[in-house]
Length: 104
Image (tube, rainbow, N blue to C red; front, side, top):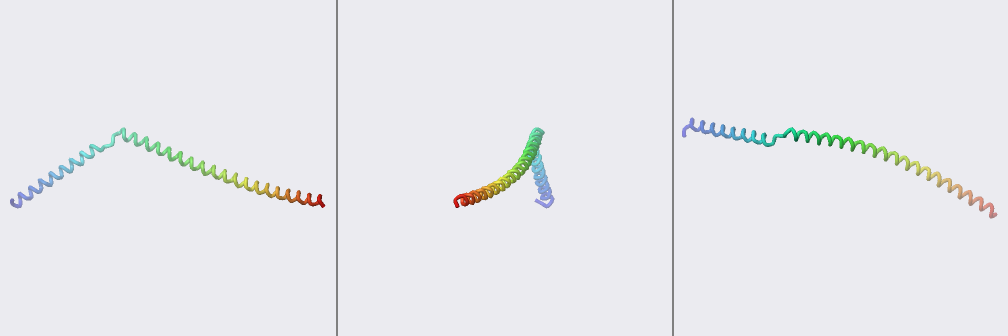
């Protein structure tokens, strides 16, 4: 085999390899192509996901707002309880003083 025959054989082998690669790429593209129905379904899923995220954000905002309200009510109730306990303590002290005066 002389040099010219070797170059032609190499060129033919490379051309065949190129053709096989191109055919494989075309076949893969043809088999994995996304149909319009699939695209519509993907768009519906994306829309549903967006709505779910919005709903989640609204729920989190509501929970934070409700938690703040309940915390505020708890603090108010604790303050009222402390005031009532102080008043009860004062009333008991006054009652003890009055009993002591009545006994003496």
